[in-house]
Image (cartoon, rainbow, N blue to C red; front, side, top):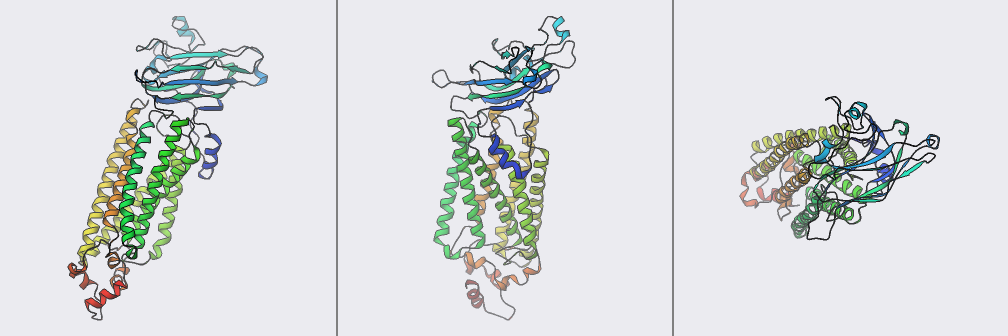
Amino acid sequence: MPRLRGSPLTALLPLLLLAWAVAVCECSIHGYRGERFVSRGNAFIVHGGSEGIVAPNSDKKESSFIWFDRVAFLRPKGNANFSSGSIQAVVFDVEDRETIGGSAYGGQREVCCTADLAKLGVCTQGQIIRRPSSKDPDWPRVFGVSFHKNKVAARLSTTKIPITRTGMYNLYFIHCDPNIRDLALVGKTVWKNPGGYLPGRMAPLMNFYGFMSLAFVVLAVFWFSQYARFWNEILQLQNCISLVVILGMFEMVIWYFDYAAFNLTGVRPTWITVWAVTFGTVKRTVARLIILIVAMGYGVVRPTLGGLTSKVVMVGLTFLLASEALELVENVGTVNDVSGKARLFLVLPVAFLDAFFILWIFTSLNSTLNKLQVKRMTVKLDIYRKFTNALAVAVILSVFWICYELYFKANDVYNERWQNAWIIPAFWQVLSFSLLCIICVLWAPSQNSMRYAYSEEAGEEFDKDETSLTQIKPKPFSTDDDEARALKGSDGESENEVEEDKTE
C-alpha cells in the first residue's frame, strides 16, 4: 500500500522562518488549526501524526495512549444543506499498513471502497477499506462522525486509545465523500509514552544530550583550568577555541532542556528550540572558520589574513544562514516522529559549503606542511601532521556515515527502525566533540604558547605565500635548535636576541 501522506511541510524563506515557527508551533501535542483535507486517489486525507510509542511494562503504573481531545471538522455554511458520509480517524501500527486499502483485480490500490470491491462483498462502497490485523483483531482502530443536515461542525467523541504494543503509530483523518471536500480540521491529539510525552524516536536523545552536556563540562574544566594558569601566554587562536567550547556546552544544555520540557509537558518550547538551533549553528560555523584560518596560518605565521579576510567572512556568513534555515525547518516545532524532510534547496547549499570548506582546508594544510618541511620547523610540522591526520580521519568517518545514513533511510521508508534512528544525529555530535577534544589537546595553553606565535622574524618569508601556517604546540625551546636557526634574522642576530624579541 502506498504510504499515506498529509500536506508536506512548506519550507519558507530564511527571513520568515522564525516568525513562522512562533506562529504555528505553540502547541506541540499534535494541534490542528484548520488543516485542509487533501485528495489522495479516491480519498481525502489529513495526516494527524506519526510517533513511535513504547508499550508500558506490566509492573509499572505508567501508560501509553493516544487521546483525541475536542477534535472537530468544519464545513462552509453554504455547503451545509445535506447530510454527509462518515469522516473517520484511522490509527494503525506501521506494520499493519497493508490492512488499510485494497484493489479489486490487482490494479491501483485505493483507500475508499470502489464499486468493484463492493461487488466482491469485501467492503461497503464509499467507506474506508479496513481488514483486522493478524496480531490484534481490534486494530487498526477506525471510528468517525458524520455531518447532519444544516450543521457546519461535526465533533469526534473524546476518545483515549490505549497502546499495548510497541510500534510506530500513524493517525490519518479520512473521508470518501467528494461533496465535503472543503473541510477544516481543528482540535488536538495527545500522544504519550510511559516515560513522558517525548515521541519514542526522540526520547533517547534527551539522555544523550544530558551525557554530552557532562562531557562538555569536563572538557571545559580542562581547557579553562589551563587557560587560567597561563592567561598571560594566551593566543588569539586559543580565545577562538574557548568560544567554541562555550558554544558547544550551551548547545548541549539547551537541547537537553528542550527535550526535557517537551517530555514533561507535551508542549515543545519553541524559543528553547530556536536557541538550541542557533547555538549549534554558530558553533559549527565558528569551528569551521577556526580550522580554516589555522590552515592559513592566522596568529601563527601571519598577523592577519590579508586579502583573504573578506572571502573567509563571506563563506562563513553564507554557511551560517544556510545552516540556520535548514536546522529551523528540521527542528523547530517538530512533533511527528519521522525523518526530517527539509526542502532540497535548503539541504544542497549546506552540503556544497561543507565540501567547499573541506577542499579549502586541506589545500591550505598541504601547502603549509610543505613549507614547514622545507624550513625544517620540525616541532610545528609534527603538530600539523597530527592535526591533518585527525581531520582526514574525521572526513573519512563522515563520508562513511553519510553513506550509512542514506542506506538507513532508503531501507526504512515507513520508519519501522525508529528505535535506532536516534544514533544518526548522535554520531555527528560525537564526531564533532571528538575533533574538538583533539584540537584542545594540540593547542592547550601553556607557558610556552607565545613562543610559537607569529613574529616578524619568523613570518617575513612565509607571508609571501598565502596558504602557509605554523603551529603553537608548546615544547621546551632548548630542544628546538633547528627551528631557532630558521628564525634567525638575516643580520646575524644571536639566538638569545631572537628569543628576547619573540618573548616581547
